[in-house]
Structure formats: structure tokens, C-alpha cells
Amino acid sequence: MALSGIITALATPFRADGTLDLDGWERLLRRQLDAGVQGVVVAGSTGEAAALADEEFDLLLRNAAAVVGDRIALIAGTGMSSTARTVAQTRRAAAAGARYALVVTPPYVRPTQQGLHAHFVEVAEHGGLPVILYNVPARTGCDMRPETVAGLCRHANIVGIKEASNDPARMSALLALRGNDFAVFSGDDGNAVPALLAGADGLISVGSNALPATFLRLCDLARQGSDAAARALDGRLRPFYDFCGIEPNPIPIKALLQRAGIGQGLRLPLLPLSAAHHAIADRLAASATALEEQSSREMLAA
Figure 1 (tube, rainbow, N blue to C red):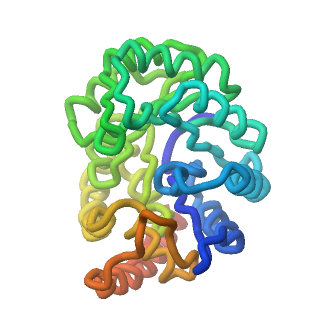
Figure 2 (tube, rainbow, N blue to C red; figure 1 turned 90 degrees about the vertical axis):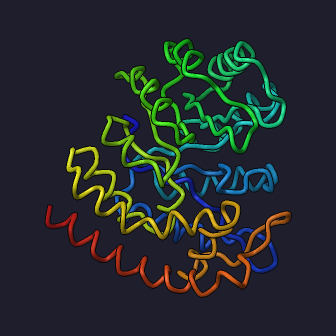
Figure 3 (tube, rainbow, N blue to C red; figure 1 turned 120 degrees about the vertical axis):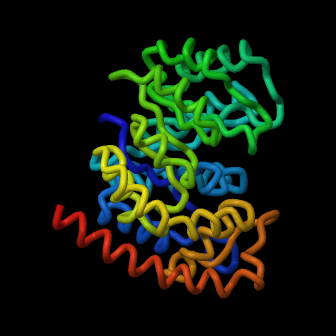
């Protein structure tokens, strides 16, 4: 399965008592399928992976595999601070039905570039799944440089990277590494359009939880080289980008999903969206409905 297009980094719906909302989970999955996204990430940072028990991780993946089947790429977030634990989590994901592993640079421990290379090679060779590298220095305190990626992208079981820095020079260096066996994804909604116009394979998105059809339309326009149309839609999405950064991810996107009837809360130490931001969440939830309807019509007409 080729990796490209819009991949949604799924939020994990919880009930008010903190337990998994499996009905909401299935509705979220089917909403993504109906919109036409090309993949989903289960138990990434947007999915509050650090707050999930092992059996919940398994259950979410098994349910996702049952819903999406082979229609789209099913990716599990498996990165941990320890290489041995990352390998074990990747094997666990493979057993539960994942097709790819999204492996973040080890949080908190801040390995050297040589350590990062050794870490990812170990996971690629022993985890049992094709690996998508994930670099997000603002969250992990660890930055994997393009020259390290250049050494890793030649590995047969390392198939792509999600780059979440907003540095155009960084993205340009990574795009030079693209090939039939190595895909480059933007991991930052607000800076994705320039990357897509420059040749990125797609976007692994937070906002597409609430706006799957709209982000798919955005990605399609940019990848087709429709510069003006892509930038115009990007401008309409700017309030959503700003909102999703108003408090730590996934607090804002879960507020929008809650207004769409999916999920009711988060797990500590994350708290629900502050009351001061409820009015803008209400406005954007209404705007999201209109944008989704318009995007769906435009894709049908295209």
C-alpha cells in the first residue's frame, strides 16, 4: 500500500467517566473512511497514547482493523523512550492488526544522532512492521537531522518520515530524500501547504479529525499544483490551525469532536478546553460543518 495523501492522527474518544468510548471511536473511523482519507494513526500523541493501558491499545487497534480493513493504511504510534520497549510495542501493534508503525524519536532521553540511527534500525529490523520515522522536537526535546534521515531512508523497512518542524529548509532537505520506497509527510497542519506544493507526499494531520473531507481537498489541490486554490483553502483553515494551538494538543481538537458528538473528555494530566475558549469552539464547530459539506461537493464535482 503506497503511503500518500491525508492521514489522520486520530484522537481517542473517552466517555465522561474516562473509559474508552468505542461507539464514538467507530463513528470517528467511519467518518474518516467516508471522507476518503488515505490512512489513520491509532495511539499517537493526538490519541493520548501515554494514557492508554496495553489492553486499550490492543482494543483500539483491533477495532480499527475491523472497521478499515485493507481500504486505508492503518498506522500505530509505537515510539517510546526505550528502544526495547519500542520494539515490543511495535510487535504488539503488528499482532493487533496495524500495517505500519509511526515511531517518534525517543522522548526525554535526547540520544545522539548515532543513537537515533541505531534506535530506528533496531525497531525496523525487530519490530515486525514497516517504520515511519517521526520527528517533533518541540514535544520530544530531540531533533533528528536530515543527514541522519539520509542514512536511515536506505533501510528496506523504513518507509517514510513525518516531519513536524516548521522550517522550510528542513523540509527541502528531506524532500531530496524522497523516492519510490520513502515518503515524506508534513506533520504540521499550519505549514503543510508549502511542503505539499514543494512535493511532499502528504500530511499527517490533527485537524482532519474534525475536517477530513476539507483536509483531503486541501491536500489534493496542493499535490495537483493548484497553488491559488490550495492557498485560498489554507486561508479559510487558518482559524482552525490557530485554535488547535490555543491549548496543548489534543485538547482543542477534542473540543471540536465533542461538539460533533464524539467523545466527552480527556485523561489527566490533560484537562478539557478552558471555558474562555468555548465560544470560539462553538463557532468553529459550526464552520466545520459548512466547510465539510462544501469540500464534499467540490470533490464530487472534480
